[in-house]
Amino acid sequence: MANRLQDKVAIVTGGGRGIGRGEALALAAEGAKVVVNDFGGSAGGTAGAEGPADEVVAEIKKMGGDAVANYDNVADFASGDRMVQQALSAFGRLDIVINNAGILRDKTFAKLAPQDLEIVLDVHLKGAFFVSQPAFRVMKDNGYGRFVFTASAAGIFGNFGQTNYGAAKMGLVGLSNVLAQEGAKYNIKANTIAPLAASRLTADIMPPPILEKMTPELVSPMVVYLCWEECQESGSVFTAGGGYFGRAAMVEGKGTYIDSDGPATLEQIRDNLAKIRDMSGAEEFANANAEGMARVFSHLQRGAPAQ
Ligand code: NAI
Image 1: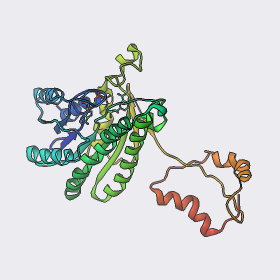
Image 2: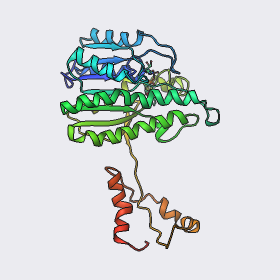
Image 3: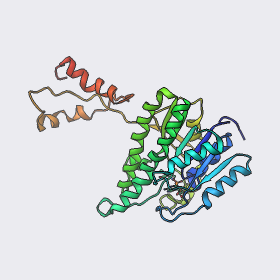
Image 4: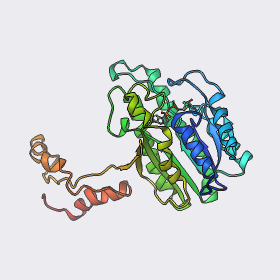
């Protein structure tokens, strides 16, 4: 047992299996006390059982740590309040929330049923809102907090058959980006990970020799780092899997201005497309206002001629 998260209290949603289990164990191994949430459902989000959360709590206790189980469905609005209250009553504080609970309802867009959209948005996106909002209020009062949201390359880069999942996952990037800004003055950091690991969700999309080298434990160090007091990262997206760690980011090229008396014509768009698409000199922006200032507003204020 190490102690870099000594005295810190964490909630891990979906902490009973796969990546969340790895995260809960890794947080506990650094001394954090953990509320292990898992409603124990199927990969598609049906049924429920107490076993997975209980088993991880037992594992943490066996290694000398402290943890309590929570069996709530994160898609239930009141679940977040219950988890936060449980953290406060069991351990007296709350410092860390890992939003990890997730399910799959893959369908091609033409075949996507309303219920496959709703449940995926409810669990991934709304579930993260429901758990994070009451947690944020507590952290704001304490002047300290660490959030990690779990996105996916399926949203960042797109993946066939996952419109519902990709939309929910990119929604989490937006939530994390805004929370990073709202939390800044309270020392609350929010980041997103896009993991890749062997679990029941990926069992049939990667060959066994690869899956063997992609254990969920290999994702945890990035997540635990983002929960460390020393970590000053906020508003970033990190990829982690199989020992690889990287950062993904939204950037914008320099673009171009088309000065004409009214809206640009389609021909002007076509003729300027190479400049519009050009990513040389692309930049990241700290927030939407900075982007607007750098690109559109400064041009309008200057009344600059077309480049
Ligand atoms: P998993 O199925 O092994 O674990 C997910 C856990 O979340 C399960 O124990 C499940 O019972 C729990 N859960 C599901 N819905 C819940 C709900 N409504 N309330 C509470 N708990 C709930 O899956 P895995 O692979 O560990 O996925 C974890 C997260 O990582 C998910 O958000 C997933 O979308 C994401 N992810 C995983 C990737 C991978 O390579 N395994 C790739 C990209 C993203």
